[in-house]
Length: 348
Image 1 (tube, rainbow, N blue to C red):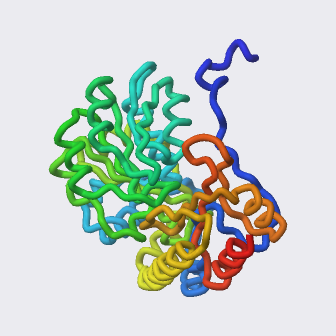
Image 2 (image 1 turned 30 degrees about the vertical axis):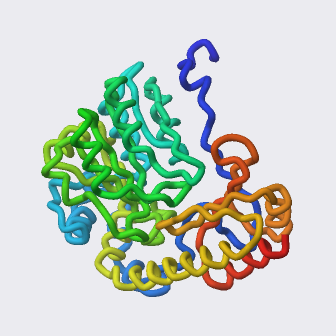
């Protein structure tokens, strides 16, 4: 069998999810709030009227709700089984064997995984010690290597750093690459380039309902781009790619999003409070963030990870080597959860 496997897959480092028991879970940038507590009866009433039928192929009703939310046209939106599927659709549309893709580093691990599976080559541009994003080098690397795609993640996962609109437009104006702006954490930041999709045909904005909307278990992602771009990448989309339950719940939550806005404000407030508290603790460097998590760097890394494990608190540790060496990502949970995390950090 090994002789039949593509070399790029053989050499692939898989994306691993650790499934341990926990008391507090703050490792995956999920929302701590259950939106079903507010609109559960609506959801039960509308879930799935005809389970014997395939889902709507174009997610028509969900797309209409997304168009209203984003103030974009329905023809500008493509729905996916999580934004991961949309990443794969975009890469499969544009990247052939040996093609270059450029992004900043560190960033979302799936850019590398999916590019490598497609046979492409990912060029990662590192920033400085505080993980600032080097836009000028991204532009030069894209141009020198005739890059098919550029991935820009803002707010960036796992650092929380942002790329301002002017810099994204600078990339669009000074390269010929397809520019994919990953705005998975947009709602915690508020700045977007979604309004530029009709001005720049090469621009694709990716978003999700997994983070701020608290629907990680339903895998609802969407891409926003010019009508011509959506028509092209839709050719690669599998049929019936988003199940009926996810489409129905996504529509209901979008139509009742005032409840979500309340949770977003709570998370942002807690993020700022936790960041301020962290800055008062010795041996901890806090990376500026506009997301629903805080990245810290500490020379007490091993002691902290052992203590978190003993307390059954799940956080995301990145080991002691590499660009993220001695870094820990803390998802913002409820106030009571965050207080327990802060106490561990202070104790150690």
